Image 1: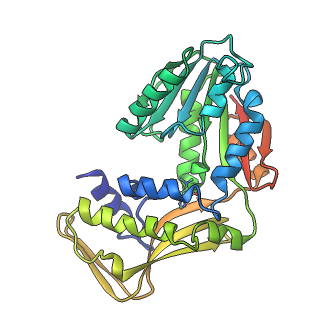
Image 2: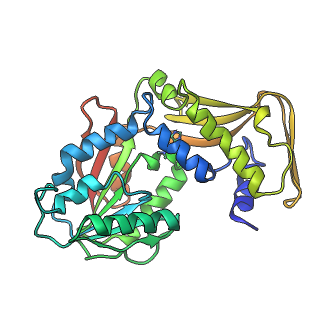
Length: 315
Ligand code: AVI
């Protein structure tokens, strides 16, 4: 069974039907996500970049290894790597160090392209890319025990369910050593209207991003009934769960068949498929959760507008 088939088997036939957000990111979906990060309504990327810029030296501290989980193009990390770069180009606060940078991502091509670019751009930097599912790391991470700075940015921690987040933090704790630090980017609870707008922008880029998942599924697995004209994008604030939810709502009754899975289901008009959750946090609650997994509290920084947070915790 393929990865998508097993995800469908696990989520599509439950109530409500769900498909994990990893199926957003084919080539078109990745480009759409890149556009999302530049939308007026989508503040998290800009807010996080502001914090990284203003706190770069504090974040890097005396780290000898920087591990970035879900590194992608490594774009956000450059401002931290600049701390190691010699002047006049870089910040230079740690220009004497010879750091190791370990970008971790599931997408091999993007990872190696970024690694090559960084190696050329940062002469003193050793780049050791790791192709891996960031939720299933095993063994100690590369680099010097106690000198690692692990980054998990972008607010992706919010895309996990409560159970997935607990599993993820337990796994991370297991691959980190005493003295290693974790910097976690997370979105903050705020006015629901702003949150909904961030996930349902006026130009319809997020709607297209969501609907594109139907094309990805229809192309990857044999199926009938998942036609994008029969669905519409919806983003809603679920106050009880403190999260935005993205749904694909059927606009008419649809019957969906997966012959290779031997399964089908009917969605009545108005019924939805949940494609993503994006949990928004209160800093103290998140810090308590981190503490339960053995991460000791450090500073929590926010951008000036107080929209987004970066938590630094220590093992
Ligand atoms: C990747 N992740 C942090 C984004 C978010 O904000 O939850 C994914 C996203 N979905 C719609 N817009 C952005």
